[in-house]
Length: 256
Image (cartoon, rainbow, N blue to C red; front, side):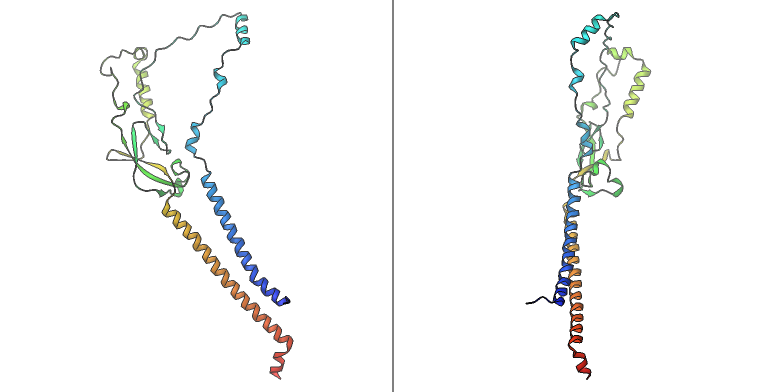
């Protein structure tokens, strides 16, 4: 069976749209895969601050060369600094970073409340929205069994600590005010509860909706492409029939 120019054009008119459609589908799948890999490989920002390398050379003993220099020095060795007595324990703990990126104190106990929900666009850069862009509400209450809630001994009368004897009342009040200012500010309080946010994983309902949306878009592209291919083939076939009829003179015989 010989391949005439008309048949070649008809074959190309069928194959070319299919090739374009398959190329477009491959590009869409590749872009989706790259975006998914980028989201998974995104590092957790609030976990990077704990990986601080420790330099062993800071604690190395002095070398023999340094000891020789000290022995040849005309100046006497300076006296060691006086050892100050340890101060009283701090009754106001400084805020620590929660495991999910929320500023919580050590005397707060947080529990998840509600389901995961997508973060609004203006909060996508927050730590509690990483890495999947979802968050979940948490209710934090004060832990009554925490050691920080127990008042220190000797607070009712005169203190026997040398720290109190050495510092003036003005210095103690300023340190107390700094400790009060360093405590975290709650997001909002409702009936003794502090509301906060924590990072959340993927939402199955949203993932299913995105998957079906992707499939629906692909089906729509396939239907539109097939409709264009069928219409194009009919137009090309009708044009070929008119050219063939004009060449063999069918139209002229009918007019005669």
